Figure 1 (cartoon, protein in one colour):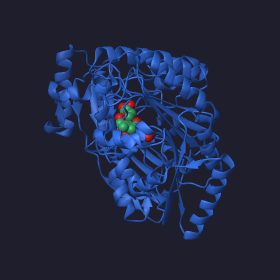
Figure 2 (tube, rainbow, N blue to C red; figure 1 turned 120 degrees about the vertical axis):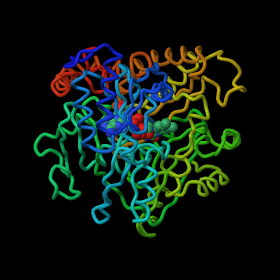
Figure 3 (tube, protein in one colour; figure 1 turned 90 degrees about the vertical axis):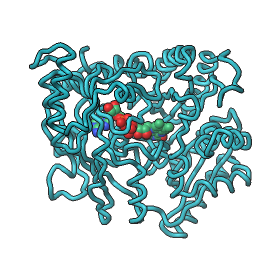
Length: 506
Ligand SMILES: Cc1cc2nc3c(=O)[nH]c(=O)nc-3n(C[C@H](O)[C@H](O)[C@H](O)COP(=O)(O)OP(=O)(O)OC[C@H]3O[C@@H](n4cnc5c(N)ncnc54)[C@H](O)[C@@H]3O)c2cc1C
């Protein structure tokens, strides 16, 4: 662990740290109560649980800065936690120490309606911004995650959305940040670099260093403010759901690729029946009923425009793609259902508030990575095969929402279909030792397969065993050496989320 200026036994150490933290944030915002700490020790992934020694809730950048200075003096680890929804072990304090829970910093600081941006703190949720932005005819881009997720942490974490083909991934919407570096120094990036910059987009000046904070899972510092871009809400909107046979992965991929290439949609995604029915229905029984009526592969396309005319042009383009690819629309009843449930403004409110994973098995073993679109069919088939191998004979499916060997995946075109994000999910049960064992075996099979097949994990979550960084990082060679050098330069005491991303020596 880190070099300490103050050398004490563990008990005395944390008693001393607690005292000083209380002076910074006030007594009521620090806890070492094991009942509270255990809540921070695990998430929905298979990563091994580990409790912090203390949790602290700061209310300002200045307090965060003082806490990091203090942590350096005592050489204790600090793990930032914004809403803890990353489902990849990112906030589990692998080396104990302090969890810095940012949820008190939950203010929308400013909307800039004219220049379409919002300035937020880490505890601000997608839901909060969506509801307020909608009143101004604007929207934030949202993942198909719960509405209670931190917008700042998701954007910093390279979030991927159904609108990503049009508006990019989370980091593409970041205009500026306030970052507290590991030594407590505060820096401002992008449009926050200077007070009079407004919402203009600034990379650099000169070489842009913001990249080291993106996808870094708190290992390079803590973001306490962000200015993020907003987008216009379309006046007109329509949905086209298309169906594909169980095994027609080539067909659905080509359809999505062409839609993305023509740039004629707002949202474009492949969802499978299991995942989509979970997202749409309000409970498990509803999901089962819906699922039975759904095609296995559902390509969902939202299109529309600022004017009726623009919307009609998009429709024409889409009809061309449907014809060229010989794609069938979903059955009429299904289209009606989608129309009813999924108008643009409500996608977020319905799919995204539904705590899908929790009502399944409590565990979401997810593998998400970037690939070229035409690799998706083979990779998805291989993933299903691995799941059948690893979860076969786990007992009757009837007792569980879904059979263990069932997987879901979704394909999200990016950059006009030049590339894509493929997410493949398995659902082992954290509560069953055998489920955990098989889940970890699944990761040991799937991660090397994905890396060797050209998949790139741009969010290298997890620890050894449950995550994916362990396979990919040694493949990065000199690139990784440079990152490790930067890490030891900026965080010499290795206090920031140590153990994460394989960046630190211990
Ligand atoms: C059911 C479900 C579905 C999901 N679907 C999607 C999806 O479709 N697309 C998508 O993009 N995501 C999805 N996610 C992931 C999720 O939405 C998270 O937003 C995202 O991964 C980050 O989680 P968070 O915002 O809660 O941040 P946290 O979990 O709090 O943090 C994520 C990482 O960043 C670090 N961190 C936290 N706050 C800060 C900070 N202020 N400064 C620096 N580092 C910080 C943490 O230490 C951690 O390593 C899904 C999650 C769930 C549970």
